[in-house]
View 1 (cartoon, rainbow, N blue to C red):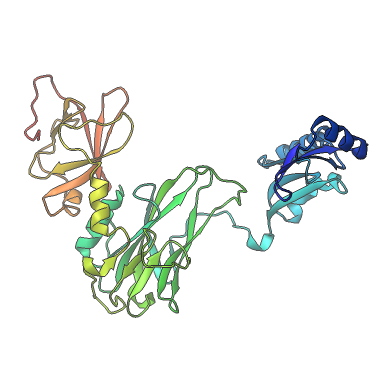
View 2: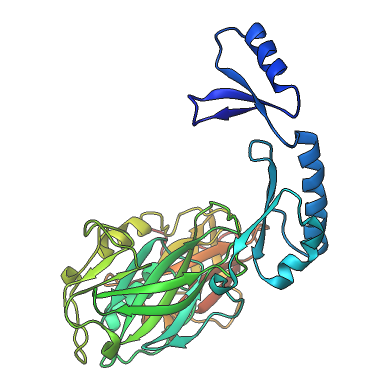
Length: 380
C-alpha cells in the first residue's frame, strides 16, 4: 500500500492479479473512501528477494548498501557510486531484471586523493576541524591574521605571510560525518568579483549524514590573483539575493595593490567578524570555570598570569608537568595576543582528571593536579 500524491493522496493497494475483483472488494469494504486497487507487475515479496540478491553482490564487491525495493515503481533502486564499466560488471547477472543502478557518471566522479596544498594564485596554510561553519573571513595584515587564526581556533602554528604580496582567506566549510570533504581549488571569478572554494566529497557517496561538522581551510592568496576593486569571499559560486549571509564576506577595498589593507569596517558580512568573535567567546571560560571531560573548550588565559600554575578549572588548580617550567608563556602564544593582553586557548581535561592541556597557535602546555593547598595567582 502507498499514498498517491498525484491523485488526491488516495490510498493505493497493489495487486499482481484480479485487479477488477479487488477493486470491487475495496468499494464494498470501504464505500466512498479514497482507496483504489492498482495493478502491479511485481509484489513486495518478489522485489525484496531481488533486492537481497543485489545487496549480496554489492557487499561482495565492497559497495555500501544504499537503496531498496519500491513496489509503486516496480523496481529495485540501488546507489553504486561511479557508473563505470568496472563497477557495473559484477551486476551483469541482473540484466533484464527490474533493477535501477543509480550513481555518478565517470565524467563527473570525484577522484580520490590527498588535499591539494596549492593551486594557481593560492597556497594552503592549514586545515583543521574547528571554528564556525558556513562562514568566511579575510585578513589583510598581521594583526588581523593573528585575530582570525585565534578566532577560528586553529591549533597549528601560524605560517609566515608576506602581506605585501598576499592576503589570508578563511573558508569555514561544513560536512556530514562519513562524507568528509576536500577543497580542490580556490576559484577567482574576476567577472563577478568573487573568490570561492571548490569543495568536493571524495568517494562519491549517495547519502550523507545531516550532522553539521566544521572544517576550517585557511589559505594565502596572491594579491595579483584577486579581482580589482571590491570583491566577495564565499564558500561556493552561489548567487546571493542580497548582501547578507554568514557564508559571504564582502571586502569593500581593492586588495590587489601590494601591501594594501582593508579595515574592519571594510570587511563585512551578515554576522560581522567582531560580532562573530564575541559570540564565540561567550562560550569561553576563564579561571573558576568548568569543562566537560575530553571535550576541548575555549579558555581565555591572561598573559599577566604565570603559565606554570593555572586555575582553578573544574575546581582544581593545575601545575605544569615540567618541574622546571617557569612563569613566562611560550613565544608562539604572544603572536596571537588579544588587545586586552589575553590569549584564547583550547583547554582539555582527560576523563580520569589526571591531565589537563592548554593549546594555542600549535603549542601545548601540559598540567597535572596541584597539591591540595596550591593557590592560583590568577583566580578571577
